[in-house]
Amino acid sequence: MRAPTGADLPLLALAVVGIGASAPLIATIAAPALAIALWRNVFGTAALLPFAWAGARHDLAIVWTDRRLRRVVVTSGLALAVHFATWVPAVTLTTVAAATALGAVQPVWNALIARAAGQQVARRVWVGIVVAVLGALLLTGLDLGGDPRALLGNVLALVGGMAAAVYVALGARARAQVSTVAYSVSTFGVCAVTLLVLCLVAGVPVIGFSGQTWGLLLLLTLMAQLAGHTLLNRAVGTVGPVVVALVILLEVPAATVIAAWWLGQVPPLAALPAAALVLVGVAVVVTSREAAAEPPVPDA
Image 1 (cartoon, one colour):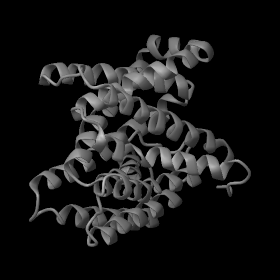
Image 2 (tube, rainbow, N blue to C red):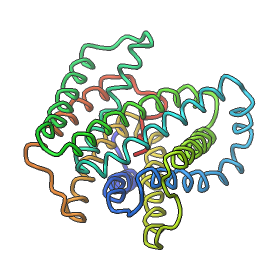
Image 3 (tube, rainbow, N blue to C red):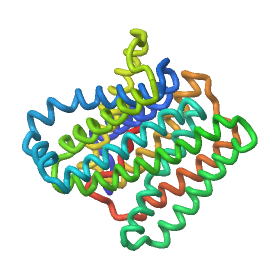
């Protein structure tokens, strides 16, 4: 873990704004949630494909010719599709603050996956897990007697975080063999195809949107998928994965502030301590675990 210096601070700040704008943009776009998830991955794949073809063609060939690696990548893409198919609708059902905070529990699920795989989990990590889960339960419990749509949104956000944890865990295995861009473009592609099938089966319209909607879909891809996550991945090499993982937690207050300013969506005061518990617990988990080669960057 290294302190940010030089260009790191402004780039990290820009990345936080990028990922923080994700949920408010999703809440604004006048399109079905599954269609938003689909086109975000289609545009993301299209943007990364030229770079993968130019600089990682060999890795792309390995991904699709190695049977074991192909299985990992396809499963990871399916997990990413589950993440988008649950978290994106969650943003439209509950508040931006709740959906973002509950999605941020992802590192907790990664710690539990590691324990299930036989890795030792330090006592401090368990403390962080308990605190984060308590905060998530409190945040979700606020809607038990209120709007059932909000409760469903909170549950979907939690499921989306679990699916993202599976995506990250599988990604760590795949990136040990191939470059990040080859892995990313492959999983985004699998995710896009899966979401397209879901849209067709469910009868969700994927075209015929207004020019403003298409513009917002492109802006969502540019802000969250390309600027936000690309800059965070760049920062891994200079400040280390622990700092980046902690910076990702700033997505919650950033999204809350943007939603309050842009959408007038101010969360109830009772939700703020619960969200703070989630962030504190996740921060304890992140700082207690050994840093991996890359941080658990979510694709929210």
